[in-house]
Length: 153
Image (cartoon, rainbow, N blue to C red):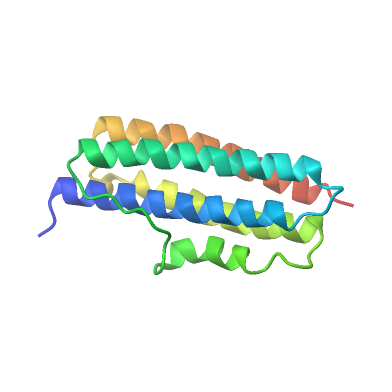
């Protein structure tokens, strides 16, 4: 039987892994952009940086809970595969296609954060507050990516 602490640590570690996927996805996307895409590169770099900060905060929360920290990327789990799929599809795509793929990844991380905040996650009040704060940044990033995608010529 899984304890409340074990469940919350599992949830935090899942968010660490998908944030690592998000970092890799945006880093890859930024590298695949052309010279005329400095605006997108700056946005992608910011979102990768935001996820690095998320990972630091989530890692601290795992430590405070006395849990074992996961440091890698996701290997299994359908909710996380979207960012992995996104990373593999950038080469040779135009701005709109890259933005569409990034939005798919953002949809996956949004879903992970929503799931993390469900009552069965057994999060402490502090953990839930941290995740809700990060969720807002994720939502803002998703909305920006979607807006940019929708307004490409």
